Image (cartoon, rainbow, N blue to C red; front, side, top):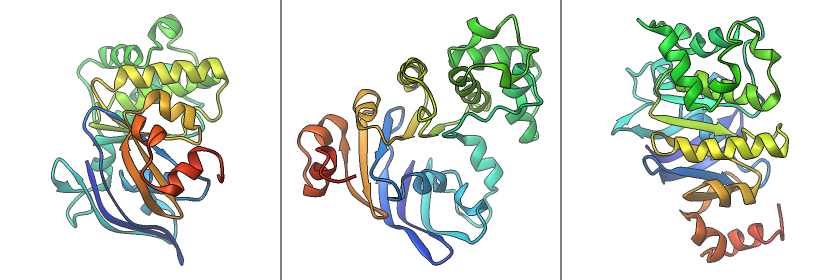
Length: 247
């Protein structure tokens, strides 16, 4: 996946200003930066979620396997089938069972499976949740703990077999134990999926990401291998942010 000269607006507010970056296949890329710098807006542009906000618009290209997802004939629903997203707050469908939550993405995309039980088991295993819920699949998804709900949402995204998984601060509402489990899961999933994770937690970025991009005031300031960004940044603003001089 590659973003080319992405500009994004919320009404008159220019939230992203010409962001260009390539996202490495089957690696974890972290997006860091202070509040309001455009991190979440950027990842929402990667699967055309930004444009669903009233008054929002996007210019530029996002290439997925060489094809511009903002092309005139591209169906945004199909884009989201290939570029899944997990949000900051766990959002299982409260009226659905655990099993129904996993299959919900397929149904919302107008897809069916010849073996839905296999889809449910595979997705829950990938999300490291199967052993905890395999005997209670008929219970409400909202009956799970916060960390389990977030993993259920990850399973729901994985059931679609996406190429890219976007995670917008997936641990910000979780306790340290649940956060550690999600971080372990991100590491495990990166062998199969391209992952982009937005985080305010720089220690988390250092733990889970292969590459890190630092955003500031709607622009990408610096992007490279995580260990280089955190130990030998090339831009003074990056160093100032990482060392806590502003944020």
